[in-house]
Image 1: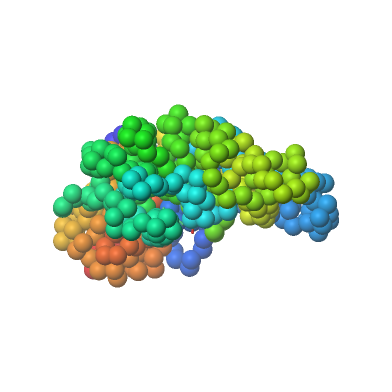
Image 2: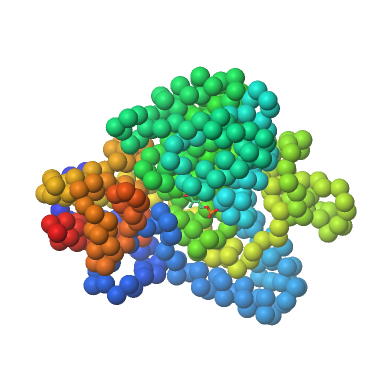
Length: 425
Ligand SMILES: *Cc1c(COP(=O)(O)O)cnc(C)c1O
């Protein structure tokens, strides 16, 4: 696509955009700035306008039915979580039986490790990416220690090569190969939160399986952002949150994927709770835990209905649009941002602007991580004050995510316009 840096061009693209009407279905924050370009869908997605009615309905039903709402409300709470499954499974490319919405992300990864990280004296190592999201790193360290191993020995981080920002797949594959006999698991973020690098999960899974290891992924920055085929890729397990690209509300319920071949394996160790127990005998309150088949069998607790109702309203939008259409627009929109940043880099050489996210659209989602080595953090504060809502990571990375569901080409143009005013300072 031939991009141009003009308001007319941006508006013409928005006119042509088949998804343009979705923008009106979201609340944009009013932060008192003259202009606003919200680019932090990578941290907290915007609120779908349909959420309020969905949550209100459950509040009304609770008022009206009390405990009877579990079975007699419009959308009975007893099976409420099942209503979220089809759309969530579609988003990650899974069968319905392989996905369930429950708990939150870090909790879920710990629970999945109970089943899938079963180290032995000789096979206990985990390969992951360097500069993981801190919560994942803490999770890994504490899991490894819990099993009596030393994180420095058991966790192998694959870093970018000296002078590079991205991790080369060949280096990950080499690490898998050279630790083949000691490797218990490959655990990666599907899209790295900091650099926006999208890993080839199919290839990593294949390599892990080839040496007898498990492959698991944290999809916090991938779900709702890139096309996923977890079932087909033969991934063992995955977990993600719903409040970033999936717009479900702050801290809302997460989701897990467990491949169907594990979902039928009742010998896998797991932590049990009544919601994971066979639902036909759940209320008999017997002592013997019999997990349900599929991902459902990893649930512990009954569903938090208010949060789930917000998540359901948001997932309905995804079910309507479909990931394929979102991804198509996403590639063009992020391409426009890349073009815009390229112009700024040329115009302001002493700002030392560069994009660290991969250039190849197949190796990234919507986010671009922009290195502004030549400018202080002050630039970022000025951006916020001027209405560009992005995210800053030490020492000098700005993460900007144009989200195809609600961002426009005009937003990206506004970004360029505001930066052009701020960068000379
Ligand atoms: C956002 C994010 C988290 C947050 O975890 P919570 O348990 O939902 O607080 C964890 N890991 C990654 C990679 C993330 O991007």
